Image 1 (cartoon, helix red, strand yellow):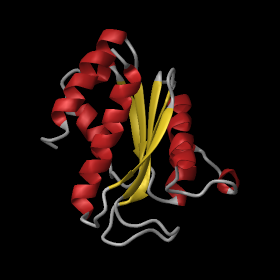
Image 2: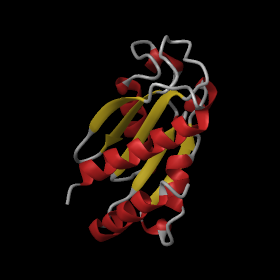
Image 3: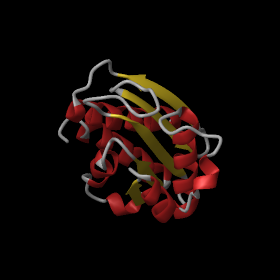
Length: 160
């Protein structure tokens, strides 16, 4: 968490200054994105909520995304990360949404992606999606890397 806190503090200041809000739907980061944003005092001014969407059941129950919506989208892709980001943004009525999906390791995903593969997206006034490949299967390190990359992507899209 200590490595994520400095960037979360910078983002928090920018979110508060811009009077904008954020919601998070994360998977393989396991809640670290939300935890980093919530670790900053005053988070209630910008953080509306989040969900760890780790299974099909959680995707249906927490975000209301039906299985049929996934017919044309493979998990652990930029398209899926963008769907998570936009859905959580709309569901919470936030200005911004973050979506994260990937394979932390130690092995790859059943979709053929190697451990260390993540897709991250932000939805809002300046949407974007990126893919990250860490090249290793160290689970905890990948979780931190995925969370950091998601926070950095948000920072890049916030501008200023």
